[in-house]
Length: 187
Image 1 (tube, helix red, strand yellow):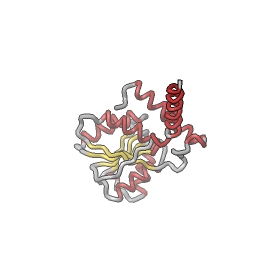
Image 2: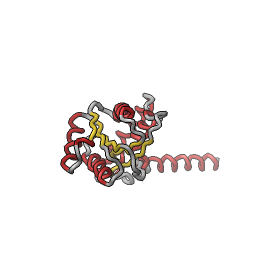
Image 3: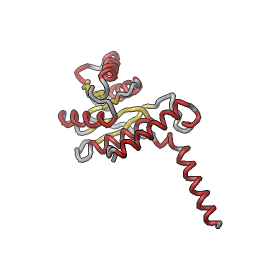
Image 4: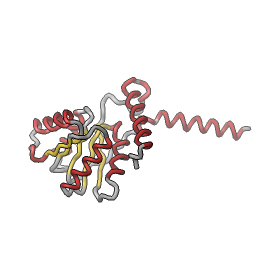
């Protein structure tokens, strides 16, 4: 009987810790390294463009690629050009309407340009799913991917359950992770 109680308490503790850590689990942030291209994913966050441009300015690549919906990448491209990035060093992929399509369309462009490495930039809460999707899409291509996330200042990963914005983000990301898993789009 005591063993059942201990096992039950342990199970409850594991579930509780998993729920409490759900926001932190979404975050992946690797150290940037020099690559052939920096890929900034759309999604409505200008901070993604700004961080991509910052990495470009710091010399991590000589090429920027913005991937997303037409209006998102137009804003990202304009932001880069306003910050003195030459239009000749910007590639635009504007057909994507999902993270999965970001990966598929970006992969095609990287292969066409014979790029061997890329930094993928997106919001911190979006990076776990992005990494899983991109790793599967780029499997067996020989292209090395590095995942550098930009912090969303409104997202509170440690205390995600305490405010509506963070709760909404975490729940949506887990729903998408499950959906992508069911569809076979994750590693």
